Image (tube, rainbow, N blue to C red; front, side):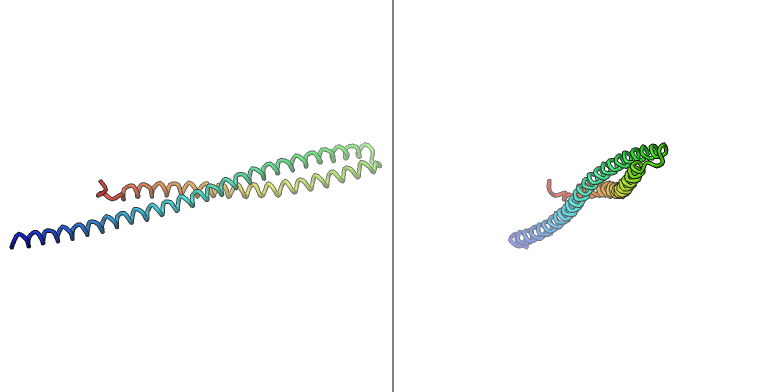
Length: 159
């Protein structure tokens, strides 16, 4: 075997080995990039869940405020109705007191029903919030595990 043939074979071997290494590195890099893309998609989904959670928390706060407002109004009308019913007990023939007592009782009933409606919406939102918090917590754990996996998948030939 001549020196030229040996050098030619050695050059072919090195070129072939370099080509295989280049393919392996690019395949590893591709896998890491795909894993990172998946992680970014999960992070994007996590952010959407957090935005939804924030909106639901804001809505729940509003429902609670409305519930409290309508409960206060209902209590106010109940106290007025009670005042006129007490007046009606003292003067049974007082038509004005009877009308006002009835009027305030109806208003109190109206606001109590409204308060119940908002209270039900508030409770529904609270359940949604708890569910979203659980989803967010699970997704954060999954992303953390994926980030660890991506960290260990880094190609070793980069040094």
